[in-house]
Length: 293
Image (cartoon, rainbow, N blue to C red):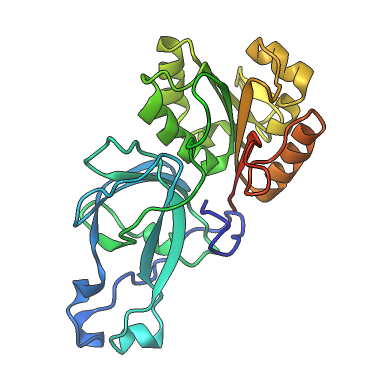
């Protein structure tokens, strides 16, 4: 999943990926093949056939960033311009899932979009392959401005959990929050890519409340966890039963990351209970948004 802004929305995963050539050959360009690249895939970890971790190392090293920010990737679009020597790149932005303290690579948590333009090409790459990564990492979906000691309620759907993974890794031993409540919503159990890692952290860290939930798993599946959309679990009485404390703006800051429909529904629900969305006109707002698709 990539960020909705600044790139266009995507379709849902469907048919198998393509095998389109990723890099222009030296014969089709007067320039060396690698002139457009500036980063290397250090490692690729396939979580299932449509979900993977890509660990990338820019030639200049891992740039400074705040957890929650995004980086833009690029691969040639295969157009006539590329074949003529002007490498035209398809670019998409992805939240960084690794901590800023991780110097070996930038970790990205990516779902294959078979009807998309970039991810079918990305799925053809493996460790050692080259690509383009924007030299700067940007975005405002961070913990900057959020006071220490609050209950942070993180709500992610699909790969929208990536920025929360980065935030938790960076600040888990820094006393940044009172509690870190993470709702991880997916269609199927197999799509909970960070589940084992977060369950391991939760067993060691009493401040972490990890709440994965699935929406389309079969009724006879042995999944012991939550079912239903994340919006259902944000209903105040339901939240109180799950977390053991009230969901109120006086003590809670909520971060929403995922598909726009989920965010709109959660924002409306929270608004009914006294929350306001953070923004220039309301900097004191305690709901922070990052729309994916």
